[in-house]
Amino acid sequence: MSFEQIAEYYDFIHGQLVEDLPMWEALTQETGASILEIGCGTGRLLLPLAQAGHTLTGIDLSEKALRIAQSKLEAADLNRQVSLHRADMRDFELPQKDFAVALLPLNTLMHCHSQADQVATLRCIYSHLQPNATLIVDLFYPDPLMLAEVDGRLYFEAETVDEQSGHTIQWYWRHDIDLAEQMRHLTYILDEVNAEGQVRRITIPFSLRFVYRFEMELLLAMSGFAVETILGSYDLEPFDSHSPRMIFVARKI
Image (cartoon, rainbow, N blue to C red; front, side, top):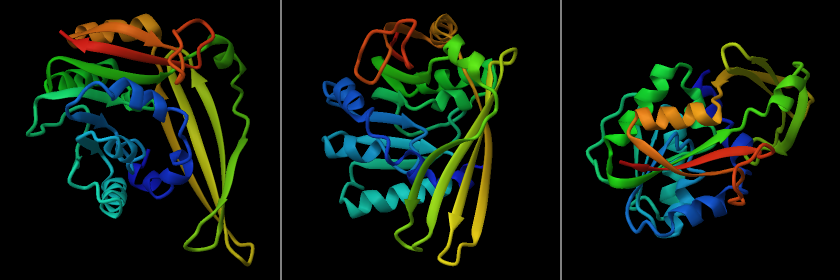
């Protein structure tokens, strides 16, 4: 996956996602200290959390995404509350080592395609947290019934008009599942249509490695965390067999 390529369309793909914001605000409102966000992208979570009064540090692998995030923070006069760093979540070193909370939102951990990379990420986060700090990991729930229905068909997701160019952008996607490797292979197809009807097609393939509930608990334990609760939705409902998400709230031990 090209993170630089997807950064150009990140706000179109994820920018309208707001249903998780109340959850992040609720889970961080009592921290009273700085927050580390892993995979911050163009600042979708950074801005509202900074507006809520938090001090944050965001890391991302994409320079383009970080530039977009920085411009948004400056426009909102929030740049003094937020520090941005280009870094690989599997191996990063920040000057601050006493964050009270770390966030792994919206399937970010699933970009780690091996158990070694997953543990490396979690342990790297651990080394940047103060004692008893909180880690929150938001993951796709691999519902067996949903996985069994995946057949590679193409889905239409959304359409918008780019304010700068006036071009229409249409978003399609498809996915396949490799159960043996626990991999979800996705392809985003973005068609940019100009006033003359000419189409510029951008194809972005990428893969996400999904994990199961007890597997994730073991990964967290191997990395020095104890799970306090598992939520099943952005409405803070308990996790069960029909939940759309697995949201782990863990404590550094």
